[in-house]
Length: 274
Image (cartoon, rainbow, N blue to C red; front, side, top):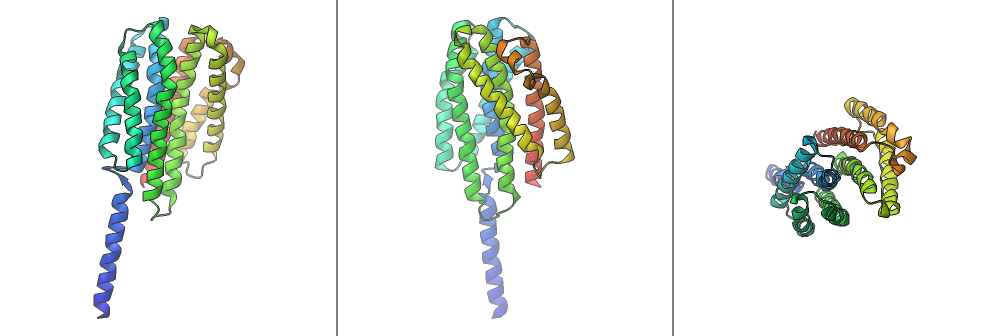
């Protein structure tokens, strides 16, 4: 009799564990992957906007054209992946909000680059960015709810993946508004405030990530590379505000910062999955 009860309890325990594991995934992918992907959508919203403005300004090279084209296709594909794997009502509503704004934004970035549409992109990009950020937060909340059975390091890392991934967006946003500031000087006060906020947040997060207990040797080395790149802009904030850097230089530095944080965020995701 005791053996039978033990078997029943064991089967019940396995059933609960199996249900918990299935709930801890975002459809067919992990929540860690979903946070990383949705976080990239924030970055891509800024990268597309930046590329369009640069082309409108006449900084016309093949790399920027490829950026605009590839960012658009990646944004759409990732939105499709997030849609297909969404299960909670809150996440689905967030995705619906992103899609609605994307339908307004997409025709602009597909148009021939010009100053008039650049102004519309400046007007809409932050709204799209906020919708993408809300989607990240919605997925993070869903992850927190579905991972409550485990109470382990995973949820901490979900938060770190979000924070680290946001640095990719901030890098692109800085270049976007640096470019906008040179194109539309009448809005300089507004754009300088945005750049100041971006610089302060970016710098603060670097400091927080440096002391994370989850850092591997590879992450620390990449953060060292980030600080080396970042120093040139951060130590000359006045130059950033006054447009003394060439656009090509800011473009190069911010793209390299984005690449570094893409690596770092991917490494945090790998740690979370182990």
